[in-house]
Length: 411
Image (cartoon, helix red, strand yellow):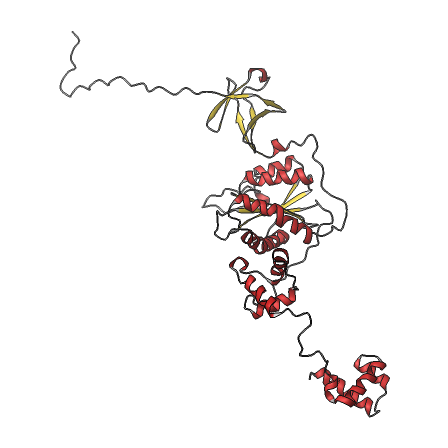
């Protein structure tokens, strides 16, 4: 008998002895007067145990049979479901094994079977909460995670995330290398699908910010006293396409994308394991067909402002040109230029005033092609066949006369 039961019993005895009215007793117990009279009658017939609920100590009518419980434990004991929590396990049981069970019931079952251990809640470090941006496309957080996504079953690769700050809508892709080209490819796909967001929010990685070069014997100057550094390739591309780049000063500042990686490193890793993924191509297929649809269906929220802040790609926005690795080369007097250890000749019909000795823009595009632009015009170039240099043997040197002897005279 609990303390609450004892308190109810005291009130019922007082009502039975007419020390208080039935109305007062009903108010103290928290029931109607009609139900109070039932309890008084039950106490008279059964004694003090009448205040104990009749279902206490009995198994629930919805309790799973021992056969079903053993089957669930056997399934979740498999290596493929190692580390699954009750929430994720309940989803996979319903989807793959057609077994419907509540999350909390499964939690108790897994804890009894030593498949899950409840973790005590801990007070984490408190950071100032930042309100979401009001509109979709107003701010997109962008980052890359280096993690053993296949748990040693295959090659190690990276996951690039782009998550909308207002809605948590996710765009992601697995890549073999966290390079400028791979990030540009995902950026191109995002822009073609959604349009141009107002701003991207990233860390200060070398892909997004040029690091100043400082000699060992010199101290780093404050930001206000430094000379402006040239943008990175991605920074230049964002500027050409009219998007703002914002740098985060700490991991907590871009907490939304950091938390998205925590979710992916739990759910996505286990999903890849269950699906038997072993290659980069299979991982991207699972990401596109399973994980991203689940994320954008269950974790996406409605923006406070229904207006979409994405802007369309206009005619002046050339994605192929902006999303390329751009370098500058100088045209020689014979209208050639050197790039990537190769010599290129500018076509005669594209020669124009001011081209000789001028700087041209060389674009190494994502499709592997190369384009050369002078001012607003693209030039046709062709690779020149460089003739190998001949090895010319030098004439044999004349012997130096020894000291004390004169050189032989010519006849």
